[in-house]
Image (cartoon, rainbow, N blue to C red; front, side, top):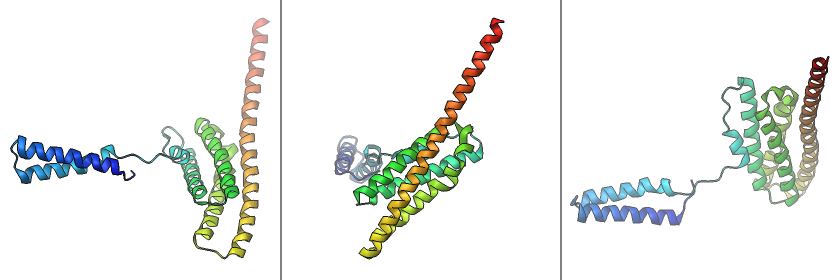
Length: 206
């Protein structure tokens, strides 16, 4: 929930209106009217206050996982948490190239996590992605952001920037390969289904 001057003003108007009605129309008296008005202000503000928009990573984190095996649900939750960490890190980076690199990784990570969310039986194919690559990406980017926040010396930061940039390129390639493997498995499944259907049709014709 974000603070909003407009919402605060609306709450004051609602509280003031209830105070005036209670004290002068309904005969509650000034004290009761003031209490009712203050209560209306407190209750009405969170009702009308603008809500913070959820990032895609946060939406993945809040996605329902009922009916999934505990290990699959845990992997998806941890993956969504790592994606949310990466999203937060990308917003803190001032270097456009680094920020775009993190966002590219996040985009592919979302596709992989979303794919496993829809196809939980394919988790074994992406197990290394969840157990190593995604958390490594979140850790590396988080540490780099902390270097900037803590004011690392310019020369040291330049070295760490180059190392982080290289790591991001490696991770981006690993993420792309992982997603490609998942799609290849889909293609193989479809080809197997087509072959089975073809054999079934041939048997029916005999």
